[in-house]
Image 1 (cartoon, one colour):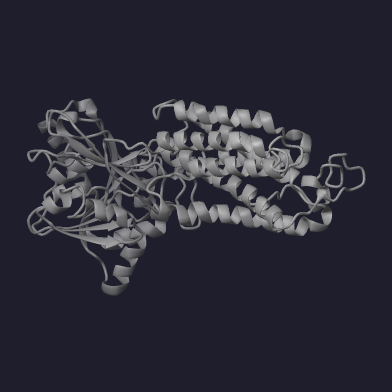
Image 2 (spheres, one colour; image 1 turned 60 degrees about the horizontal axis):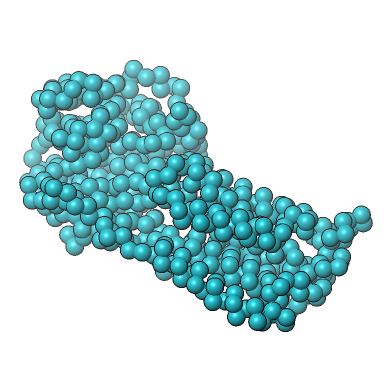
Length: 523
């Protein structure tokens, strides 16, 4: 996607019967010359900026607006359509109208509130991407050289796309604490459009005859850039920390309330943890892990031996450490070092430091870390293994395969309990997990609970897995008894055994095969 792969070199070379707007026609290229380094840099910049905009809009839509599966296809298709249109004929691009549309679309995105309907946000950002890329690709086509220089042209167009990708994928996470690629891309687009006008003899801003106009345009452009920068970079008084890693942008909010306030950790549109700040409530497990959730009911009702070994895949803010007891050992597997910093003793959340258990962090991919430990010293023999890597709207598929679960079962003690968190807005994962459990002769209990604010518990879906059917039956009875003891309405919990589901209807995921469409919530 770094170059106009949909258009062949012959299209530029003026094949027999080509339209009058081919590269050898009057006006093909800027001033009909191949140009030198400046022209090559223009090609590089136009191509690279379009890729920066593509990736910036994709990040904005998929990580900040909504993590909807396959949403990335929409901006990619928009980008490719602009290439097709611009490189089909010069008549497809008119500078003035597309500049006006881009400015209007950008104004709409600034005006829209974060809670605006997703379809409106997707439409606005795609219109912005379409109009901006039409401008960039249209100017790129206008600046094309004569056929003898097409090799150099394609080289710089491809290099520009590659550089744009590197800027977003490698450089930006090290420079910025948020997703600013879209803003940077729009700034680059404005500058590249001005550069294209400066070298276009047909433009009223051509450098040789429009220097007086530049004295007016330049201050206006700088003022507009400054105003937009101020709007976009205004500090949020509720944000006490923001940091970007290669896995996303993590933001810590401190929200005041009558109870002493609370802190939350968010990544895009997903809340990864919440903690109350007052001393009486800060040790209480919250959200997906509250006492009224499937996991909370299981942990508080199931007998646990002294010195239990507990493994947790996914740290969040360390909420699960609140369930640690004196003598327990808890090992958290976390891939993002920023998360371990925020949830650790020197971070913004105190679940880990307040825990009575001995807590250990293992940094890296959980599956690889577990397999490496098993290769060194055998089974971890966890009495409880909790998987919480699937609660965000995107799924790490390699943690949901038969081969991955084989490692999880090796890490589990013979009478151990596995708990898998599968709350998700876009995927129905309960039966998939039950299918994986059945593959290893284990039994599963699907637990769906409604939110219980009085117990700091949110709506959640959990799948509990045990090797022995009788153990799981006893656990189900204890969960029901515990739920009644908390004086919760009977309809606030739904329990279903995996054996009650037609698991054959769900394909088994492996390292070689997975099917997201089969588990999507189409309604």
